[in-house]
Length: 174
Image (tube, rainbow, N blue to C red):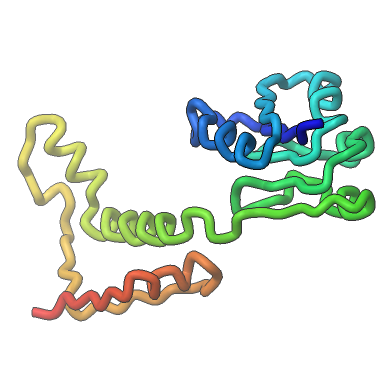
């Protein structure tokens, strides 16, 4: 009998539009992939009752859900966080809960740096000015030079340390 893998949570479908990746991976291990798009709790419990594995993004998995899971051996939170899963209940049933701790860490670090530069250059104000047809840089004054400035990162978790992956040595000296 084929193993059954169930995926649930709206963001699964935002990141993987046609779910082809999941279907291919399931076929490789002779499993059946089932996507669950319902919000009905009873239908969800029925869908996961005979699942061997569960892939979730932001779809709560409570002790009540876990209680009906008869065959499941692993729940994968397809994201960094897993606080929407009752890990204690899963562990009590012998179900491994896993996540993807490095998911998008470099992209988030770069995005944070991009937002800091946007704030530094008062980009929102400047875009508003030029979008209205103007070209008056004085609306963003005072403007500051970045040369000689120091950037401190408060928090050296996965994202705070991600900059080392790029090995950048930014220099804005005059």
